[in-house]
Length: 60
Image (tube, rainbow, N blue to C red; front, side):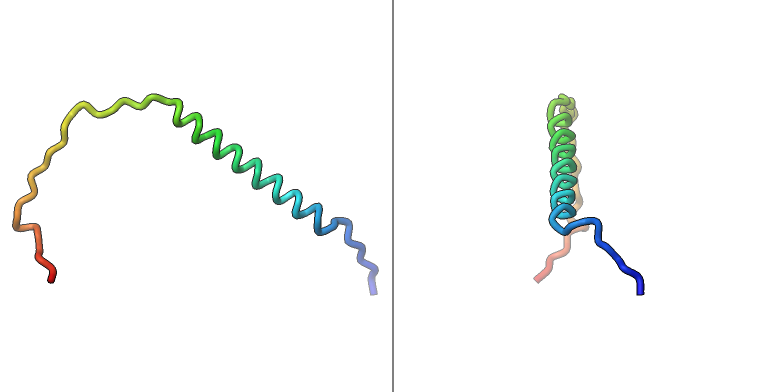
């Protein structure tokens, strides 16, 4: 029978998971913030499409 010693404790692994989640959340918030700063142009053309009545079905 071999002797096995655990070198990691349960609390430190939980702390590492929390720190990784916090870093991922901060990266995601930074990406959202940077995308919000970009001024995307709005479309100037009005899109209007006429749909014929034959395509509509009445569901009762």
